Length: 258
Image (cartoon, rainbow, N blue to C red; front, top):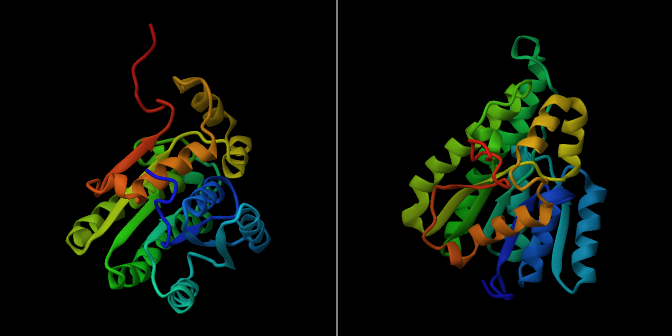
């Protein structure tokens, strides 16, 4: 993958205000892309834009609620009007939600997690795909999680949403592979992001298990996860379709060390 892999390309990154999304936005811009970064936190995504422009890259910033259909539709209309095309979308925005046993889980919080983590991916692809196809094809990467493979106690909404992202990605990949649009999912493990720090405070049992169960003996850095997203979106992954790439330091390997 060359340093100008995305030269002339238009890339959308959701959740670009911090963590994996910010690092991905920086990485795409460093490789020549015009990055449209969006986040619910307007100030945070403006800061991401400033970081990109300081390094000589090109970026726009916009506050968007990715779970709201009207706002997602307006975002894609904005990208079409400003840039005329969309080559890559990294649907990365997400939240963990509260930590409760299933029978105690607040329904309103469950619905919110599903809306932000899963409905947003559906809405994103629904509006991104026509514009990507119009430009001759491209790639979409959706952020799932190792929770799409496991069942972390207390995190029923989060796990359900990420299992859903995995399934939705596979359906979308099947429907669009012949239309020159590659769609894959990314499954980060324990990553040192602000969101994970909040989850650790809410669910210390899961945090302790996660950090002790990682063969690499450390959490991942957002830049490491972002690098995988950039690779999935690049021509280097031209024959990778409908897959979920797990980047977790070996967390889900299973077994034990001698």
